[in-house]
Image 1 (cartoon, rainbow, N blue to C red):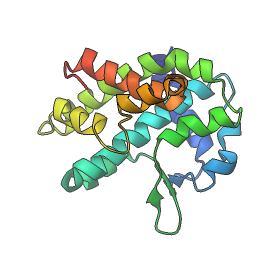
Image 2: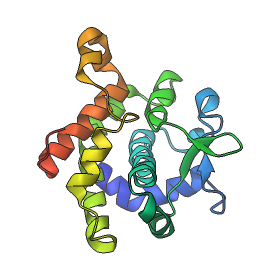
Image 3: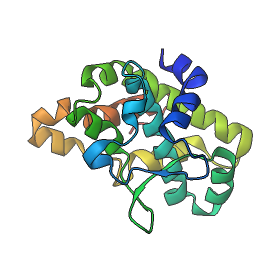
Length: 189
């Protein structure tokens, strides 16, 4: 279901969510009101948020780990920037999943149902993008950097110390990402 949504509806919903294509920035008040999420039909929100999450995540990972290639990447993708403040400081994409759940704007179980398929879609899309546009970037290396990035990784020790964390949507998203990387790329995260 999430693949169909991504290919057929996500861009349209993104243009509703961010109506001014000239302004790629959003998220300034995400923590208080998840601005414009209410414009996305409630039945589409889980898939929308997962797709938005991995779109922002790959954009930030490229900026952080492949800075010399970022300008070209940004020109090709024109992905949105999840940020705050006058300097447009990037926010952690985890908030894209966490805050709407906390605010009751999306059902956590609906996101959970789509996470594994969403992360596999993410892997497929990134691998395909590199193959077609940036052949010199090794997808296995990219995902290795991503899953061990300090803003992405959730160490198992944290979950062991606080077992209730395993039910947290952010932990579940990270585990789905690790599992998808292992399944699709063959690297253990």
